[in-house]
Image (cartoon, rainbow, N blue to C red; front, top):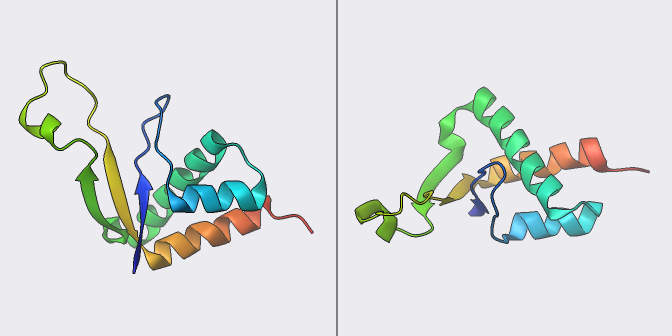
Amino acid sequence: MSTEIYDDFPGRGFSNYDLLDELVEKYGLDRREAHESIHAFLNQIVDIDGDGVILKREPVNPQLLVSNPRDLDIRHWLTISDSAANDIRNSFAAVYETD
């Protein structure tokens, strides 16, 4: 199994994805804060475990790889391992969970 998340492009919009919705609902965070936290935790995981936790990068608009006359940003869906997704959940619990 794996989990799909939207890439991080500071200051730009992003699409909904299941892990984001799960963490927003569970911890009452706004979407931007949750999305940025997901990527902060993912970056820490990559630093420790390597790029292998990101299983796949798929462009949101693959046609931009062929023709991009307006020089639009090429955004990606990232597929991360289940262990990385669980590590992100655990990181959220450690930082945001209150008793």
